[in-house]
Length: 233
Image (cartoon, rainbow, N blue to C red; front, side, top):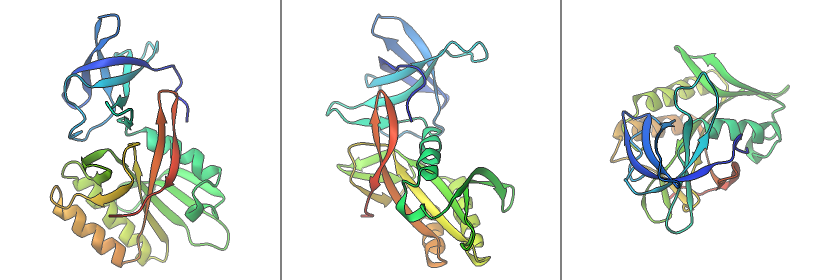
């Protein structure tokens, strides 16, 4: 998935009210960018970080910049826009680039199911059970090389796991796919200390037959693509 508009480099001044970020552009101007990430962004919102913004000239948008990436001092990148994984994954699913899910020919995003929920992707194919795929963007890393989820308590995430568990009981296939939006991580683990309830719900879901897939991403100021499968720590 390529970015619609070329990104520009800036310096983060502060992130506040979850969805706002003040940044200084390279020409010295200070602007406010939209931060499409409702999470805590632990370790990713420190003033002085190098960030990449996507400008826009859409008259319907109040903010003319969207915060897309963080460039770390070691040259690695983190994607902060939580809407990007679904867009990148949709293209990968249609192209059959996720081996574990490549047998499905029909990909439907945002399908209503369960109790007032929407599944990120419903996959279907004649002769196969329907497959419900929930996607989570992973950006937390507290140990070198290790990506973790979640970065804050997520009652919504726990609800999604419970919904997936119900789908397996109905004879469907259910997949929890963690997409690591960092280029500096090679392993994944649940952050049980941050949200024990989520970790417990995951264990219950896995015992019920919910599958776990973990993939990393290829990230640059040009775009974001699905990478390779990662192991659980």
